Amino acid sequence: MRRRPVESASIRTVGYSVSTRTLELEYVNGSIYHYFDVPQPTYAGLLASPSIGNFVNTEIKPYYEFAEV
Image (cartoon, rainbow, N blue to C red; front, side, top):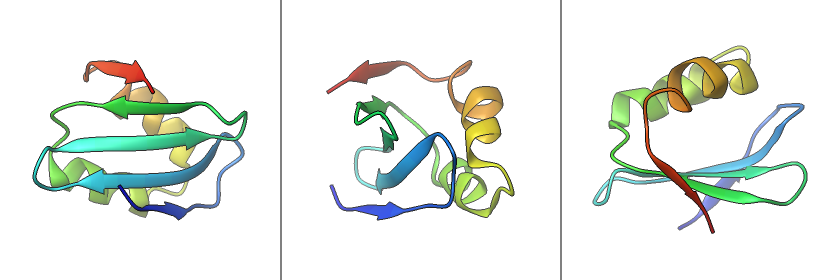
């Protein structure tokens, strides 16, 4: 999955697979997580958010299953 760099104090890059609805986040500490069954509008909201880290903490982590890869 291709990731794109983002402006964030906690997230380095983000990627998204439309076919599997998987969101991939690379954190600044180097860890990479997959968040599963994330709708495309949520991914778009993440990219448009003025605070990506806050969006992840309030709109992604509480609602979607995840795994470190």
